[in-house]
Length: 73
Image 1: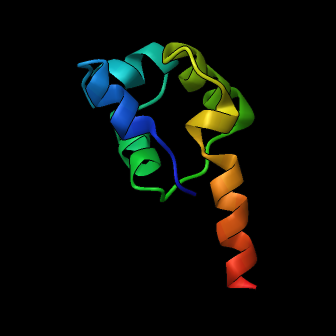
Image 2: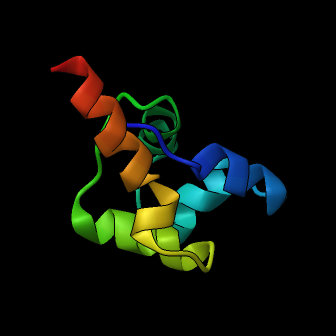
């Protein structure tokens, strides 16, 4: 699933480890999230969205992801 985590993290001048510490996960989890290799729990998505003062919908480009999903079927 596409997301804006890396983009927002870099804009905030934050390392992967710093973000991981803020949301209580490992840096490997952040790396996997940024690569789109892992879909977070709703709670983790909420914590990350709050960290960047955004919504889960914006963080994960839900509308764009839904449109991409329709193309695959």
